[in-house]
Image (cartoon, rainbow, N blue to C red; front, side, top):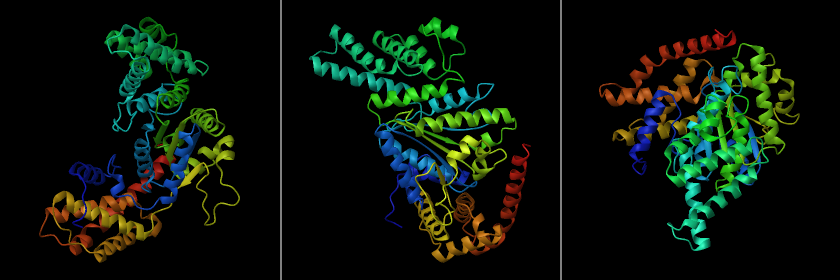
Length: 441
């Protein structure tokens, strides 16, 4: 245990996030357990995307099974491999399509969380453009033997910028996208911050109407609820042309589409999802990956889930040979099984070491104690399959905090007194949540 070395900023992020029951943004490699086949399948998709392909995966599992953890893990892998990533959680205010701008709200969220290896926490839009322009300037100076103050440099840089953007004119909305990139360059070149900010505002989808965009940028269109996905495809090709491997979207909480009560609105969202699926499967998108997390009910419910939309069901339904103990990790759906008890034990061992390292003490709990903790958790839940990583981690972190802050407390006493009641309450709350979700209450 003394050999474990993790920076304080990472142990802080891990302890705080896990205590709150949310997935950490950093340090996941220190607590990752299992999921090797799933990770390998997603990394293969990333390899194909880097070569100019596209991919879409639905990652399903019940609440607390590790969907968000897997999405975040793959996101971190992607950043290390020079992809641009963007992530968003769907909600009643953020959908794929909506009559009140919910699709555009999703685009704006994705742009807010646009990330690169050097800007892993989002807000990378302007940094990406600046890196591109600086790289072009360096190339032009080296190729033409130009100095930084040479008047010919600006012309050469502009030619190189248009060489990239001209290739996008044949794409839907490509001309306007390229025109806004050129406006950003002009603002950059002339030191006009207002023009730069106007271009960034347009690229983030923040213009409320076409009149304002035409006045400030001489562009006749804006990114809106109907067109935002077309611009995602433009972004994926653009970032690939300027040196990145591609663009990966990580969209979680797909169950919020399932919860849409209006059947017409729900179907419209499923139609958009079908478009995205077809584009990635049929080569209509390049350097684009879309990874969507949701519950099995969101996918398989034939009354209102994705399987209620026949065109999606026919594409997503499992083949004749998979199932019955056999897994197919290359299909469009990755179904997350619960971690085994052995894997959960390894997870608890890692959490114990990290907690001790963070607070500066030598852990005294034994593997026998951890097994007893697991047995108590299984017993209070009533069935092995209900033991999810989220439930285990939150309870275990609470136990470790209590033991550390109360030297007179004992493991056996806490386990006997504190575990049973909260578990029953948790189970009742889960049942209530499922009931409310079913009836849209």
